[in-house]
Length: 405
Image (cartoon, rainbow, N blue to C red):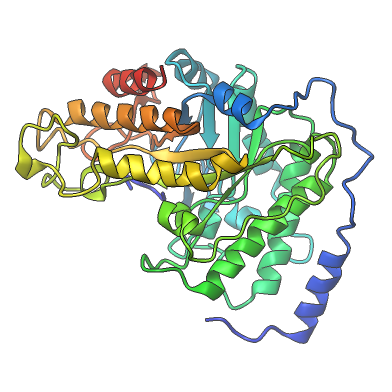
């Protein structure tokens, strides 16, 4: 999700040839120059899902941008501190997802060099969580939005050869930056990438998304070392469950270049999906729908869809499609906005909603990661005040933790 306060053309021959050289030069084996470190644990799907537990998003910080330039404080959040991360850990979260935008911090062709200061800041924030013993997920976030100035990872872009070359170069740099981190560092290819249309996916554009995921897996693996064995996280179309499990074009990437130390019967790829259903409760910024679930007291304030039965069917579909085949599922974002200004009981239902998602995720062996955009107040997703590092929504946190029991 973005803020949550929240034509295909003919490629030039030269560009196609350039891309061909780049892609064909990746090699056929992971680099042997950097071995897997001794502290890296080879965890099975069930083991890593158990250890990741419940997660929390550091939203609207490192993916925030203004006029195409990422800036940590662009969307009214303070500079991230170790104290905030410690508070998140103390609340019971085992995983922190750190959305990251790069945008104008990526240099020009053909090297596409990431600004060193920005990449070092990403590393510093990752270390805040990593050094607390937490699992950390980092991605390429706003770069895949048509709606973000400077967005370039566009499935509907006319220059796919150039996009793919740039994407490969960027992930190569990120992967090398974090190559020696152990299994608690999970790399996520992208965020809610799609063409901006919420109807059925365009097949040609979906094929581009699949190609990005394949480039991501191949590129990370070929950097060698721990990256040849770590878990990698990929989404389907707009992280939409129906468009990922249904017959709409999603293709799992091959993992040809992973380490030979991984048992052939095991996977090292996770599937990402987001959950904000029903949207009229979870994200629509008005007071029409403020209650959720079987205990709702006012039928007129409860959505006509998206209740417990829908949640169950959605998560079961991901389980049956992927988890049963050894691919863990991460619900990389979920949550609901604050509507207490319209209905004083809203936070009760937000907590019930969060608990139900966590409980259902646990039932189907998934990792639920709450979306927090740092904003507290009307229409905010915040669980913490990032300015003074205090808890603002203990009831929602309690719901998540109770759901994980």
